[in-house]
Length: 247
Length: 247
DNA sequence: CGGACTGTTGATCAAGGTCAACCTCTGTGG
DNA sequence: CCACAGAGGTTGACCTTGATCAACAGTCCG
Picture: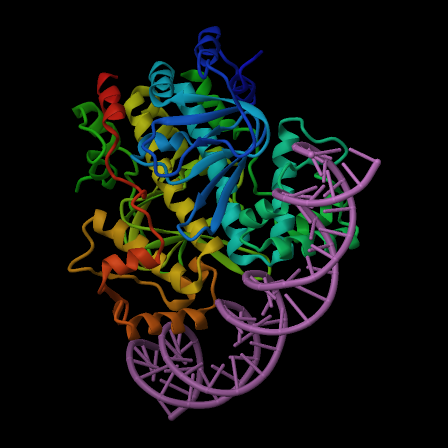
């Protein structure tokens, strides 16, 4: 099967055969994960990133007293936390929340790639930049939006990201997280998450069946979530793309 | 004067003369900024980053109804938002909050550097990673800490970052932001910021004089802020550093 | 002197947290 | 087949944190 990284890179720029081969060698050893498995532990010395092949994971930080913040959800194809290469200790953990498969990618694998091909260097930078964008939007949501808006934002973000990897059909997708996880992602209590989701159903914004979610009114949703259309275009600005071709 | 980027890179890895020269050419045209000047506007098509030479700036996003979230404070030497290179529209704005100087760095300047030297590619990745770390910590603070803890975190973060660039003396530093800005950074109201800062003074944690802040008890501060010592080591793990030397 | 800006304090209010009960599913073991 | 346990979700009652509104004081500045 094609490496998830190659699939992702395709959106970015055409690849040479050599680049494809090099990317294919990354994350060769695939492991299985079960829900609650810790793929990468907080505070441990590090030097690896997680490449998620299938399933869902979360990146989260837990405080000594048990409070927890979910930084983001990790979807299939995501290379989670390569920035930990530059840290002595990981500032957050990565845990599976469903069955899935992943591989651990060592720092030097990526660094060697970058050294060999500056275009790939730009690619990894781009990945980091995309993640930064979602992170900033998440921060705005948690810092300045009401509970209602925050949950709308979360659903909207996941909808968008899942759509990009072909996991949405008719505005319906699976969010394999219980309400306690949603609470930890949005900075709310699980009780309030329940109330808010119910309210959205009552208002015909969202339909829920187990953990399948259907967005009934995307436009209104986006408006509630205060999302501008500034978010994460998957394509590069033309000027940058042109430049990259020359290298 | 030496470019702020070179000064920063020094912490990272020794440079060749050629790399120094190339870095020196970046951000040649220095401009002056006054408080409230918008250096980079939200929603505008972009392709430039801000290299701040002196003074303070903020990166922030403002919602249609006026609510605002400060993403982070930009300190002298920071290269703010190069990730906007990959966006069609900036998702947040950069504004000066003091007098200062800055230059705009075009995307291709950095990309050409990276193409010429993979080590510099790793450097820019590292910058992005550091920023990501602070961003994640900020998210945890806003999502899961109380007002008291959040403000402790903010002060602690700025103290740490300012110390790294030599702007702290005897645990005292200048935070040239009014309390409304602190509120927008922490997701609180300015009234509550005032109350909380007063409480910290009352409890002999913090001394304030205008906008000079003195941390009276760093250890307790760190504890309140729930900061683990996982945060942002400025040095690279040895394995990575060794690898970079070979390129 | 008047106005803008900032910080402080008090009074009141509401969003959302906490606690607890209860219900539905699902799996498990006898 | 039933009894039971555990996880997850929902709802109600009550409470706390921090928001909002408003007044006022100090400072700077034209």
